[in-house]
Length: 166
Image (cartoon, rainbow, N blue to C red; front, side):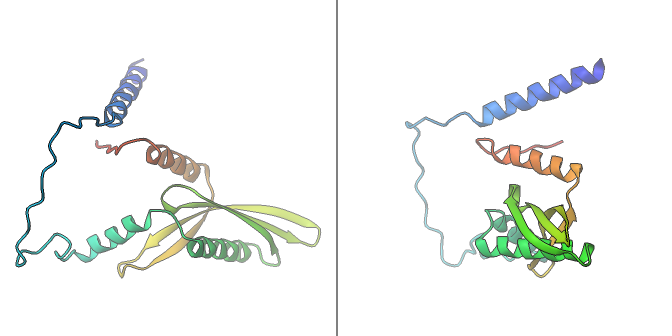
């Protein structure tokens, strides 16, 4: 019974947190501070060099705004190549590619061979290397990956900015 109460308390706490964060800010009487010019000799935050790890993290963060058509085409190619490597002798009949949260994709590759047909369901996500380049990692779609993506998408779609800490 204690676990159920803890779960109920956690859900209530999360609901209150989300409700509070989502409240509109309608106070138009607040004064807007004016910007003070910064001396030219002072380095701005943009000029501060980042560590290589932080630079990669920044690139990954900037990348998460939605895939371009070229990126989606690249995902489709990677998924088809992966499916064909796993299924020698088969050919691609069609591909269905749905972007999920944070530039991750669910991809179904429709394969055929003679009179046989099968669908290979995949999860594709970007992986970032130390040199700020990325590649597409293709994995078989599992219930765990499906659940992870669903949870991330639910939080992404909430109004306001939510930060969850332990």
